[in-house]
Length: 138
Image (tube, rainbow, N blue to C red):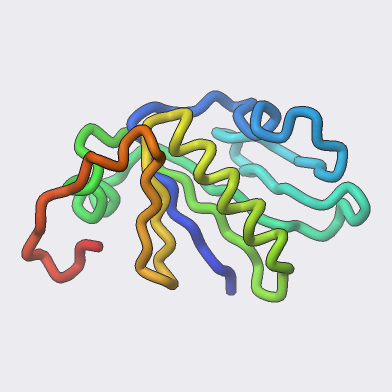
């Protein structure tokens, strides 16, 4: 089980996006990269075998388009940031910070399904989706 964040983007981030986000931080290590078959695993440098969060990414599928299309017209890419249960508040904050950075840099939003919360980058806060009658939509 995990605590998940959904990052929905209009532009696909490069494989090295996490390295760009974490530049200058020596407290983190990562294995893999965005777009890789093995996905991206982020861990504390002090405990590299303990994953803080995992990132699963890929192009938008039909379900993503149905659920997120009214929130973010033109979406092309989605990422799932999964924080395993039992991780610290700092690890949750790190995953959210990475998701928010991606949303800001690559024109997107972050959806936190456990709280039913949508985070919009400051540059896009005036942009809101129209109401939708579909009960499956956020």
